Length: 300
Image (tube, rainbow, N blue to C red; front, side):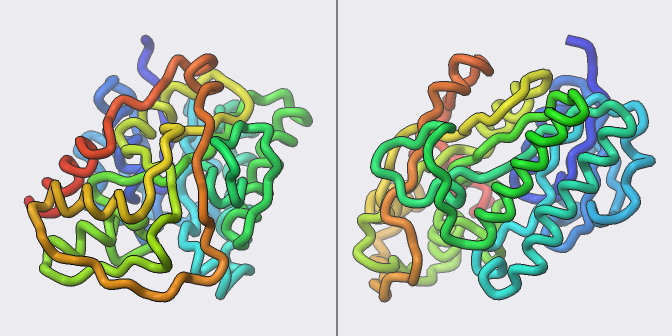
């Protein structure tokens, strides 16, 4: 495969840094665009160039000669989206439009990182791409709006952009104190001997997918068009997840029970059969194996 010139927005962040590593492993030429508001320089692998700037700024000049832009820069904290919906829309919608305009000028394909759980809302079964979209928080709304801009640019300009709806991504380099998911929170607390908390009855389920698998799916989307779920299709309850986290951490620490959080989904799981058929991708890392890799990164 011929080497790509690729741009990764948000490449100093959690998932973005895994995408950067996967691109470099293939021998691609990688430019990271990140304002370092949540990402950190140390996450950018050797071999990638870093341009510190906001995706809402004048980024078009950096797209010249780039075949693909992996757009992962986002306001990704659901709580912030509820408290500051204007900021959430500014970054996630207007920032994406700015990326799409830069890509249009230079003929660059955009692979847009969207969200599954926050868009579909409550799931009665693994949600396929055509399932009803019922976001509860502004974060899901802004990601869905950005997806619609991606699709509209394809119709209007004949581009071949693609949107990927990620499930609950976990893995090394996820910040346990930022917009982290529950895996990073649990392992981060266990690493320092603090007691984790489980909200509600702990029977709420999620689809946990390893960051390395997500990076592979993201690269597999180059040259494709449309919307694809990226997850495992497997539900795991918070109680089950915590037991696995304790196992890989070698901990006997019991979690504290806390009141359930307003608006929290009971079930969130994705149907990933379309990605298997069309992208030739499927998740490879079992949950316990991925948790062990994540724990090793916390305890290194």
